[in-house]
Length: 615
Image 1: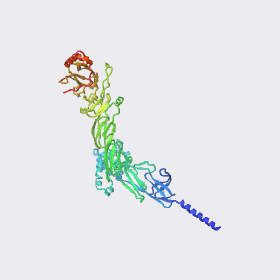
Image 2: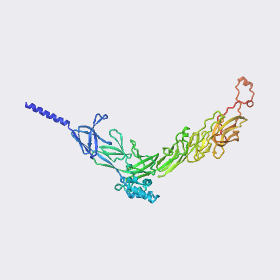
Image 3: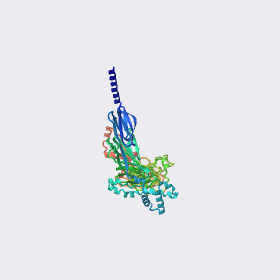
């Protein structure tokens, strides 16, 4: 009996040990600073259809027991998958990425001597008493600004604004030695930079969440924990790949250097868009936004900066403060411009284009980089170049114009619709702009002419009138063509309108005379000219003087002489009839036909175009 009992006990002990071995857990250790906290997930399911179940939190320097299986630890920027076995513990080293902002101390605290120096530089034109009051207010700090009397507190912030403006002169003296000696000397000495509020100290960082692939963005975060593997960050838009091969938890640091946009127009708000110039294709949008009079820290390299359609290249160097100054561009809308009238007449709101294609509003201040820019009115080729200097405001003047069409007189049943107006410059044949009659429009400052579409060649100077609209009303000419027949080849060759006056110049294309016609021209003095004579000989010029007042409709009669045609041949007769008249010579037959054509006056087929004048 004893032997079976011992055997059963031995079997129970063996099976118990096997059960303990099957359920034994192994240790997971997180090699990281104590403030590191990660979520541990257990992965269940097939690849591509995994379900992650949170197991718990683990902190740096701690350990936890895990069953055998597949796991994932992750934070907001990186993740690490591992397989926990029964016979081997797991250790995960975490490397901390630190962003080092060089020159940050110079931005957060400025000593009194620097304040006095800037105040002396910016307030040279001010009185000594005002300078002392502003200096004392600056030294006391922003907490005491409210205690300054009202009439002096208005002058107090002025040095702050001006200190942000002329600072490039001082910073240019500071970083110069550091640029020449890169390395330890450049990193040891702080970069002397402008005084800026702490809220404007910005470093843009972006990464992708390993769990859902969403973008996580920060403005002022300095430290990131990187798990084993390759983790991608975008710092100031530039792509950075951080490697953690799981061998050490040693820290990683990246040096960043400031760039500042200097604007002496604090009331004009704008957003600057920064993009790095990278050789590899950009997998995502890497543009970040900057604000003026603030500092942003970037990795060394080349970048492009854009604001309101103007662009600037900049290079961030180690140990240097990069400052970009801006100016202001404004396109003024003339006073009393009839915008409502324009909209009622079917026009659209007026915009202007910058040479880069940016669409700007009128009467609006835009921050732009210094340089020369082409400004053009929307829907036209009217453009001029304007120079914008740093810290200065360039105001582009415009003037309004409108060309009206005459109304249809009561004696006429109808009048054809007036053609569109063409705008020209320097009497060039091509149009810079085409507008509808009675529609107010804008032009840049300058000298222009206007004409009529379809009557190319005649133009009139566009008159300026102080605050009123420029331009005048068109005139209408109703032409009645008096068709007459002439002997021989004597006929009218062409008809056209020629200008005759100080403000009107040019001549029209040849006019058609196959039917009565209406012609619109700018008001002024003209000659209605037509050429008469034999096409093979010299011709004479006949004229009718036309003085057309604005809005006037005038009717004129123009004689048109056509060569009298021969009568068409009669129908052919049979052979017997032709034989009876066989003795008739060709000359005799020709004379008979001419005599018959003179006795009869058949209807004339009017040509639809005229033969060019032979000179």
